[in-house]
Each structure stands twice: as structure tokens, then as C-alpha cells.
Image: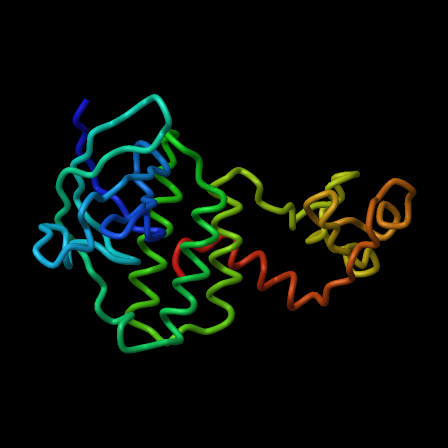
Length: 215
């Protein structure tokens, strides 16, 4: 069956002397892997049509047997040339697409991940990246996967940290539980690894990053 969609290039690796294996992220079909036959030949129609961080329109033969499809046509929509001249932006983009490649699913609609990855790459191409951007990106990836850490209330007892009596509560972050714990719950048995005490300004910043839709 022939299929057509918009896709973001996540990974390009050699498949043979003349071919590539390309991993894509799509809005409706999640992660896709295609073989690009003859891609390395000098007169190949695919030369310059795809590379890392490109958004492309692709046409491919869908194969259900082994999950590896065959690319038929490719047209670049957004090649993002800025990554060729700014190594810091390219390094941050490499981390972002590797993370997306690890958490995305094959043949599973994940439009939020696709839109997030596209927005993040657009931002990185135009701006020299700051370390905070990657923390924002990780929090947004967790939100798209339904795994956002709970930062407003204690994840065990539900105590609200923004309440007037919150000052002596001293919330601590527990990776084991996926959120903040109050002093009492953090000291209770069965909390896994020792929770980390976070300063109030760090907690406030994490909450803001978690709720904002833009880097």
C-alpha cells in the first residue's frame, strides 16, 4: 500500500553501500523507518531531499510484515539550514531528536510529540540554545506522554504546597513517585530513593516551564 504524509527526520544511518535507513516521526503514524534505496548514488533522486532535522513530505510503500517501509518519494518542506552554521544549536537538536526517537512509538498517532519536536527545532535553528531550553523540552515531552511530574500537591497525601501553611512543609522531589512529597510523606517508609530537597525558586521555575507552551 502506498502512503503519504509529512515527516520529521530523526535518524539517518547506512543500510548498504548505496542505501540509507531513515527514521521519521509523523503526526498520525508515530515513528516510521524506511529504506531509501540508491540514496548514496551520485544521480539519485534523493540527493539533498532529506537530512537530519528536515521536515519532509514523503511517499512510501507501507509494509506490515517487518515494520520497515520503502521510501518512494521525498520533498523537503523545511530543511533548517541554520543548523549547518551553529554547532551549539545542532548539538541541542541532536539531543532533542534522540529523546523523541526513544520515546515515540511505531505506528501510533502522537501528534503532540510531532508538534513539540517541530516547534523546538524551529526555535533552536533561530536562537543560540540556553541550557534551560532542554529542561523545558523534557518537561513538555513528559506532558505529551502523560507523565508530567506532580508539582502543586504532595503526590502521596495531596497537601497543597501553595497554601498559606505551605512554608514549613519543605517539599522534596521524588523521582520514584514522580512528583513532590511533603516533609511527612518524604520521611515515611517506602519512598524509594531519598527525595531531593528543591529550593522554592527551582520549584516555581519547574512549574512555569511545565505550564508554558513555548520555550
